[in-house]
Image (cartoon, rainbow, N blue to C red):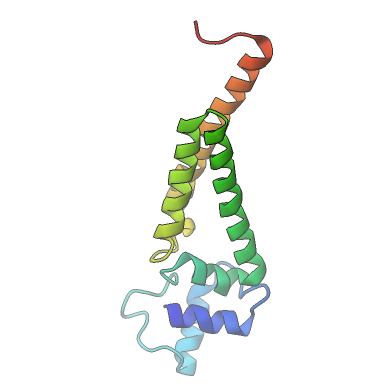
Length: 143
């Protein structure tokens, strides 16, 4: 599957081949002889590597956006930890690093369940931060 992703990236490096047609692209590569029996091995619906899959389907523009997202989340986590919101910072950092490392062997952001859990964690931290900001502005807080 990695070989397929690299070949797709070579064919359309700037913007990739597009989302949603990975299977058709792999079948075409198989017809052309670039890969063999990939469907029989059950590896046909994704590249089993988030970064290679993103390069193949989204191109350089897409992978830079993905890396930018991860960098922004790590930066936010560090700022939260330095600002005294350690739990929120650690949660964001843990979730982001987990997705990044897991992405080496799986295109995990293609799963709506994974994305939902990831965004839920981000939303919880955002809600906690907004509550803390409101408390600091009004002078109220836990009693």
